[in-house]
Image (cartoon, rainbow, N blue to C red):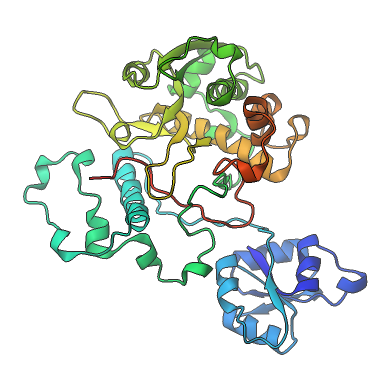
Length: 416
């Protein structure tokens, strides 16, 4: 959510100021929207005007009933027109995040993976300039002969069109819903929702026969780290991507073991060594750090390897938008949803801490996130430790997406 309107009053709304020059601030928000929920939690009722729609809000702003509109930033960009007599702006501050997704049950990861790769096919189509082409929109002649990894995901594009064509909005007003070309940040923390202290699943680590519970009882984490083919150093003394991968394993251990980050058993695998995934599959390691997201490992393979789950990436390559971009993440077996979710939240927590400016000792999140952040600090702290002091503008995709810039790019593996 962002604010739009008279520039001075947008600044008032973003700062939450309600006195002096901001005393006449009036914010229009739509009935039943999450924007209204946020505004009502941030401002007294007499600063709020409730409308039925964005169109009504725009009329009220034009006739002076309100001077600011609260709403989705891409929608606000659509309703700010160059014909306005007064100078209206859309603010840069993103006050709330409301990413929309396709939701599936978590007891069928293969089906969930299929849905995810259909979506990435739509992204890939836009990156490559591919669009609807009926001659390539092919039905399956014998569906039972196809494994999930053999499905023709590009049918999504050839039969329906690419992501941009389906989106149908003006390219300049799509906000985050654009393809990232590598010049702006892609770090974005999906909202946690309500993680409460208690005995339910992730909040309190409910006891049970789960991998998460077994690792905690064992008292140590088995972490594999991917290194380059010519690596001959000590991963404990490494920097750059290897050093960052080591730190993410330690942050994960801190979250698992009450803040103790040293209880990690290490293994190393060269980047082209397929035994890394075999070791993850057979339980030799619990997690693989620095794993490159690849379609061939996402699904169960004919070589008897189970499917794997890739966390939110913590490092991106600098490839152009039209190339396969390298996404590096923590990799887990996908048959234990609880541990996979836990690992993903640890990665997200470092990005979230960066967004909120949270320091190691100041985190107020649930205890295991707090323990992880107490070790790692924010994403920026990890990046600076391993890559040095690099300006955010020079870090490519490895910077926060602060301004609602392009957030989309397909995972590798969809090229013919």
